[in-house]
Image (cartoon, rainbow, N blue to C red; front, top):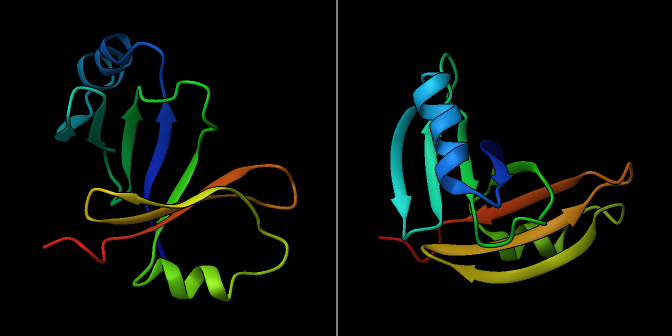
Length: 113
């Protein structure tokens, strides 16, 4: 398990992208449709993922695992499922809530090429 992204939902992708890319100097890495953009966080392997699909979704880290099904089956009892598992481009994603109330996301890329 490793942290891949910091997930940041946004109601205004254009404004958020302008802040992170144009003002803070993050480098745009890829886009998924018109609502998701990943940016390189300077000095880190972790990327920022801006997403306008659900602006009310909680901010949180996205961890990548080899198999979400395996992780999900053996997850700690203290992780509450908020959403998923759901199919995403290239794999699967589940949103959990940890005991302190923060959201965390766990995904795999098991169906990607």
